Image (cartoon, rainbow, N blue to C red; front, top):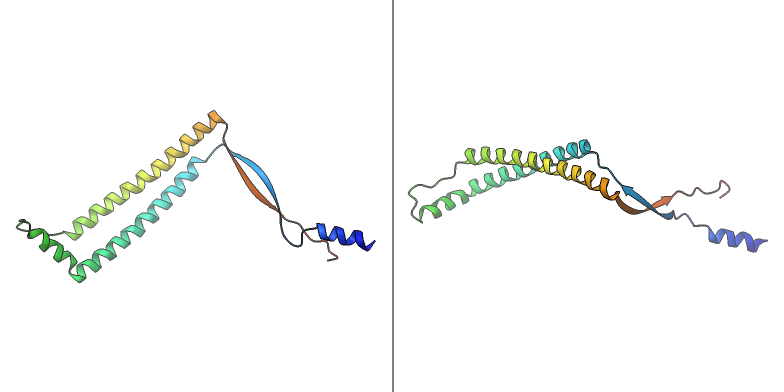
Amino acid sequence: MSDTSASSHATRDSGRPRMRRVTRVVRDIDVWSVFKVGVVFHLVLFLVVLIAVALLWSVANTTGTIDNIENFFESFGWETFSFDGSALFSNFVAFGLLSAILGTAIWVIGAVMFNLITELVGGVRVTVLEEEVVLGSPDE
């Protein structure tokens, strides 16, 4: 009798979740969700890069690196060469916003293309491992 109860206790997992292999098919990606995530991602990326460039410009200007670069170019024959920080910054802002819009558009076009292709081929099959939650008996 004790032998059967010991063997049943040994076959039971000791607190580890059981894994089972499940196959899922991805057939559709919501384009509106891709648009929202793309806008947020690209605008946050734009702001991070904008702040980093502004800080690097400030450090380069404070340490005299900008003046050294201007003098270097003047030594090649330019009579006056200077960087206009405000013009560079405004052009960078325009370029960054355009890049954010373009990046989001590319993501949306990619989602639409994925949806069209999966209509033809039936989707993308993905195999995942799911954890089965095994609750212990109340007497343990």
